[in-house]
Image 1 (cartoon, helix red, strand yellow):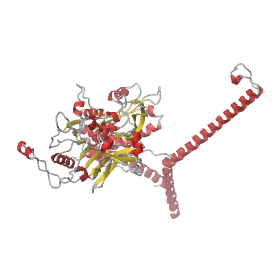
Image 2 (image 1 turned 180 degrees about the vertical axis):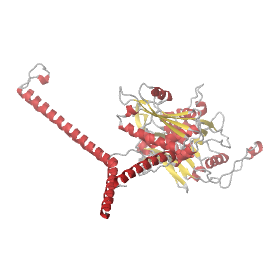
Image 3 (image 1 turned 90 degrees about the vertical axis):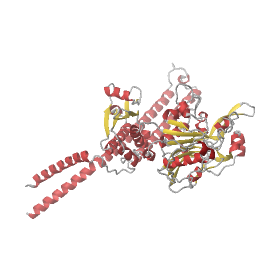
Image 4 (image 1 turned 120 degrees about the vertical axis):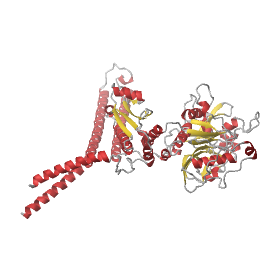
Length: 635
């Protein structure tokens, strides 16, 4: 067999092996991935994998995307490719339980009607442009459906969480169940009843709409089987009640706790005593001992003030007239003071307003990790709680201000890990009266350590949930107070796999060289614009001098019918020449920038697409040439 025929047969055999290998890999090894990206962008987290492995029925992802309408917008195209690849990873990991269908939505088509009916929201980049549909529906075998109306490229770090959340909600269709312990007049169940006005806060209304909430009675001794325990400014719990909370945290591991050293809401409700019933009502301060100490958290009885981000309040000036001033007792934790990775706070872009808040200290516990969710600026001071409840005027606070040396106070904290019981000697003894009159329910097995990794969110304020602290005059949220609390409870109410998910690094990487080129071109353009502006001002000054010397035509002072003098014509021609020169220079800058970008693009395409095949082809030709030379030498 000749060398040429052998080479052709070998090339054909390698081609068939390559095509066959791809077909086999695509059929048998679809779930196999080799992710070589820096941040493991194409590798699903363990939480997503566990959620997909636990699927008991098939789920269909229907991805709506307007390919042609999105073609002129590279950012949308890049993110659409990222979403498509993530969806394909979900389908591959599910081993057939997740089916992916992509629908190309064109204007005035049946696909557009289906997208609108499914709840996909179109985007129009500019007036008159074709709508871009870019969303997702997920449905299960009984046609229950969840929708992402529109994918936002700014939320790319949370893409995996949002998709996993869809799968989880389809697998577990009931709403998050919450048990609420509070001494405040919060009743989410009543707020969710549309038949009559409840008088509840916006937070309570939204909580009742989103979740199934059971408010525990003041004399409770057991906590029902729920997903999350919410403790918002509790009354002083009895030992039996504290033990019930302790065991719930060890068994279920999900709790949202909001405490307050000085509650304005409780003060306005009567200051801790109801004269008509003779029983204690909402206390002005709340704690959760001995549980906090066992968890490694301490909250002082003092109030934190922040002078860098205070809120405006209405005061009276020296003449007794209404005025506005800043009150450090009420302050905002800006987005920069929030954790930008944790799902509970990462996308709260309006900040959170607090009032008479406390400060949390973390003392550390083995096996427990603490994450600061919200912290103040460095311009802080502490004030005794009773003095803070007197609401000293801003001027008084400025007079007594004693800075704490740049100390940043923690207002919200998240604890993750395994806890130990605060009752090592067992359950406290029940009161004698209760033993004589009640038949105790069957006791659950006592736990001394967490049965499941716990997640606890602790906030050192409760007034931040009242409407006055975050709603504007129209009733719209001006800060993310309620969004933070609801988001925290919602995340805690998910499965362990959902809670374990964190935001991921964006897949887009900035092209620093291209950005540097654009910045350099922008500087040159701005320089030409400044030069042209200077030329215009010089021309205007010279024309004004001509008018003052009486050598002007009057055209530039309002006499539009006058003919220009030779000096004015010469000045105008000089200015036109400067304009043309500047325009030519600007076009040259833009043309050079485009040429540089095209050269860079060509180089990148060559390196990424053609260099490797050319090197392989070159090596193949080299070895073929060497083999032929050796064959000729043997002859």
